[in-house]
Length: 182
Image (tube, rainbow, N blue to C red; front, top):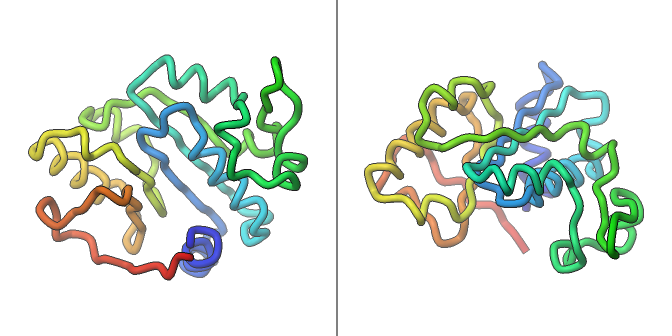
């Protein structure tokens, strides 16, 4: 749904600026931001655009792993052989390293989602990906984080959550958009 549905909508809404800003909040070891960069590259929709993907996480250990951009076969299990050849190069001990062309649009930073001052350092976003993070927060903290996401998005921006997460009891700021999916 991201590549087929959301990317064309983002291209249409940002055609005037030719700029795309995505934020992956709480991404663990960096797979999600790199996957977003890979899918954007493969779509061809944003060639010549200013594309920035920001990845943030609270764990400095995960930040180091993400910046290394080297993954084993289990992390790449849904990556096709063609994608592997196009976007990765051999790494150490049978692992695969993200090629510089994909790494170039991704930046990583340390951030606690409850740190209001840190959040203000990020630019406004067209879409925020926060999958399977809110479920670990207490209700008051969830409300704060969701409100911060709302403030961080451009008007008409998208917040994508994990399957087990819902905004029903935390925010009425967002309108549900149902993507077709597979």
